[in-house]
Length: 201
Ligand SMILES: Nc1nc2c(c(=O)[nH]1)N[C@H]1C(S)=C(S)[C@@H](COP(=O)(O)O)O[C@H]1N2
Ligand SMILES: [Mo]
Image (cartoon, rainbow, N blue to C red; front, side, top):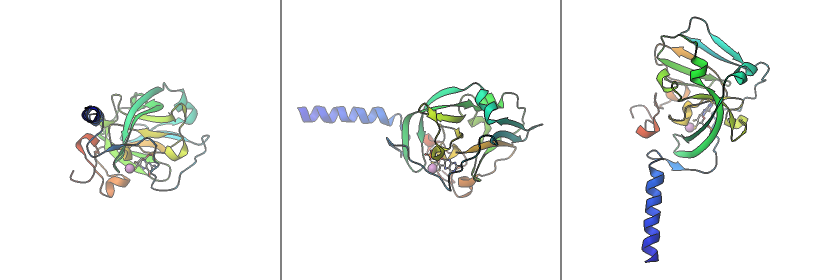
């Protein structure tokens, strides 16, 4: 009897967590670091965040200006294309909605660009309406450099390669232009629930 009831409980727990974990992913407790190059350590006095491209005039915020914008606490699950997911991560940052507030654009796409040269592209509609942030806090502390500090893009509903670490801005574009991993075979969109991992998925 005890054996049957243990098995039953186990199954129920699996069903509950699998509804929260996208197909092909497994949950990790630690926070892996995945960087394609060395970790930049920019001088905050010279740091800026810029929105440019398909705009009448580019917008730029210094570090101090960015930190004076309204910030939000964000608790989200994150999903890496290498198949780990981390549930309930806690971030603090400024929403892309806030940054885009006064920006008029006819662009439908963007490329996020970072110190070190990393880029990643996505449709503009995937970063608006409370879906993306420029995050500078993690678990109540300043975001560690290894995880993208001083600031990274956070787009938790897409695979984590879209969440550009050490982000310095977004370029608004009329046409979709592949970023770093997207040029190397990763999907232009990257929805974990649809398993959009690679070209053609
Ligand atoms: N600038 C930059 N951003 C990046 C990367 C990178 O190599 N450089 N790697 C991406 C990938 S593939 C993943 S899975 C996540 C990893 O974030 P983490 O190191 O905080 O886990 O960052 C993404 N953002
Ligand atoms: Mo990744």
